[in-house]
Length: 387
Image (cartoon, rainbow, N blue to C red; front, side, top):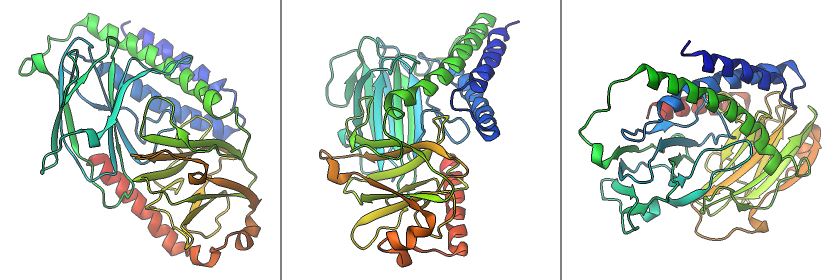
């Protein structure tokens, strides 16, 4: 059967989920099967998007195809490339906080991270008054408005980052191979379909193995309930810094994370599950940007990670996850970051929060106010996904 390789990959993927080392509870396994469903959808989508002669952008990850500790504030797109062809990317800049481009030489694997051949944000573009822009990628020598592709260039990744979900609007972007504009791809064949199902099969198992191994490289070797100093994000994103960690908390404990409000255009924090994906950020406040967070009078943002509701504006909900990952990102930077820009962490009892938080009374919110915050998230994500 033509689909047999993919069917076999699904069975192998289910075994990978069931045997994952962090699975301890029924919730762990149930969420693993949900993660598997998203990975199946994504693998099919990515295999059918493997079109380098008539390319198009597809959403690399989203609320229902999560992977790689996806940022709740980011729209991710990618398109495949041939290093010896020329491509034109045209777009219209939206009002989002950051728009960046990165050329990779391959895909993530369980043993390697693809090299970043070039990375830049829209500050490098010539953007017209109406927000329109054009970039060309190809094998020729780089010049203004033209990005030279390395001999092993394979993928163009675009990230559009929101900070204020309720007001910022995404832009538009498309890609074309210059020498195929106006032409049409050849008719589909059975051999091509067989190839795509085989590619999807390899993508599915590789995707799961990769992102189960990935946290071991960057997170789990750190002391629990700590966060690193800000450091350049691995992978070649030159204008992004991150601070990472992993947590293990009891239901009566809270983690107070104190961090300065940054001068970076984008500053965001999120939790991730042991499957190395974001928690539900639509119906729960499992992430906050600097624009969404309450900033105390001393210029500090104090986040409270806990299972129990502390009645505070900056509560980060664990949603039943005793263990997981912690991630800060700062983007579109124009300076180096140091330890003073980063977070400090304190573990306290939830009942101690009134005495441990210097602006506790000012940070309190009512149940009705909290419900309004969640409603705003639901609306903003729905509009963003359609924008």
